[in-house]
Length: 596
Image (tube, rainbow, N blue to C red):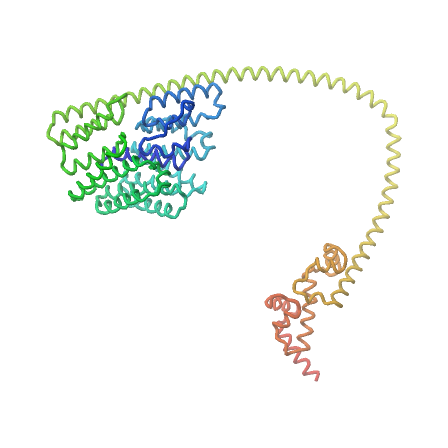
């Protein structure tokens, strides 16, 4: 439907809405304005700003370029140390080229930009650049490059945890797979993207869901599944008609005129689908609805709308009206610089219209003009590329000269500074040596006497330390023995081990000591940890119960002995006595019977 120019027109809307919506355009107020080219007016004091450039893109590209040149000169004078880094200016140039339907120029701006470390350090703008590059590669039918950049976009969105941008990457890949004829993979990407967007609660997801419906219609149309495409188109129109005021504001459709244009475009798309499906009456009705909506919409230069209208009229056999549509489109684009892709496409459509009406002479004339205009566009593009290369080369030369001069000055300053510092250090060292020699001469006389006195004092100190160490060691051993005896008495007399939640802090509190002292005492006397020590008392207590009372269940014995878990009791008992509690009780009973 609409061929290559339909895709170009649709991608302009994606660049204007989805890229800016996802990647936060420089001016949030202008994010949604590009849906129909109705960017908000900017004040006089904001003429030389990037916000103004983005507002003018697609409408007055020459003015946008002049503002960018002015900003670039201003920031270059400050070595891009102001508020606007160099990559932001380059990215704006790429966007203006994209809105001017000049994908090759946009790609020339974006290719070195995407390799810039400065841009990569700004993830949001890097995402915007990747999305823009993906769009331009699709328009230029560079499918492999488009898939590569889309995968980079997807990975960066995943790293940032942004599910909406991650889902949008799937939608970018659909068109690439369609161009390759890989419809199965395209459908899978479409379903994945729609599934993620439906699960998201992010307000941005709505714009992408609407776009996904257009992508789905394109995919179905490519596969000639017109009935399914019609069903999706109806759902899309219903969704637009039920948008809340807040949702319309987010999509830039808060004014009735802009919404009417979007509905008119959807209706003319439906007319084309009906016509391809052979439903001529439904197609005519949808076209009439589109015309009614268009009467209450602003006059907008929309390649997509004109391509869809022409496609419907051609399919419906209304060749005279198709010619009038192409003439209106040509008149819209015949202003200012006519050497642009809008004007070329209008001529191409008019040539096709004349061919359909049987006027082959006029058709040939316009086809000839299209060929000359395409050549002129290519020549201009080549000239611009050569000029850009020349400017870049001259700029690089000047930068190298400035860098060389700065390097020479810095090197000379470094040499002079180093020599001055060296001379100063040398003078200081000589003075210090003289002063030190005199000072040393005065102190050397007393040095040997002081050394001898220190040696004798050290010997006496070593003797005292040895005596104190022996006394302290004996005292520590005695304290640890006394602490262990007190611990034994505490366990034996008060049976603290029967508490399931017994810990070192509680025992330390009872003994009036530190829990580390308890651990050290146990380690020295028994080689056990505190837990092993307490469990040894519990096992002994349980062993006594098992051997004296056979009526108590094993589980109850475990609880009575202070164990929290019966399983732990079984495991520790068997490790300690090589018998399970049941086997021990049975053996104790037999021994009692034998003694009796």
